[in-house]
Length: 149
Picture 1: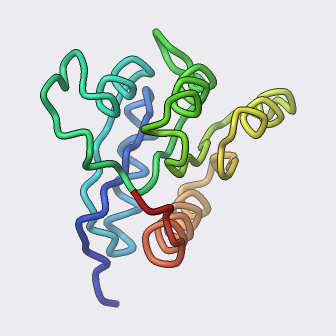
Picture 2: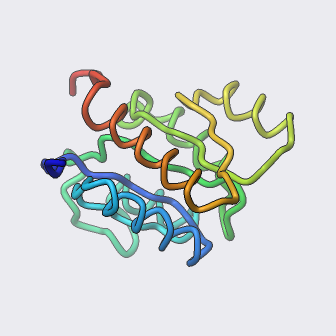
């Protein structure tokens, strides 16, 4: 299989090192070689996207193609990250996929109410998780037409 390589960036917002490693391993396993930027909490994700804090001076015109957002994050949780991204003109159209272990119906309703593009529960099994990541990559990096900048 040919590698999927491009300048499209994936922002993975994930505080669990095991889930982070599994996601990156699954992307590589399926030849998705896009750059993956990892933010380990909500504050870091917001700093990356808005070019503040530890990412001060970053060219914020370079946006990720998709944000994979966990909900259960330290400092600022995923729902608050989603709320802030949708409330800002610069990021309101950014594709955001909630990727979480939460089985709470309220989390799903809140995520969609706040404007996520997709809500996916992380499969526990690595093979299923790997397949979910492959499908995410294929759809968001190859098939989806992002909004114009």
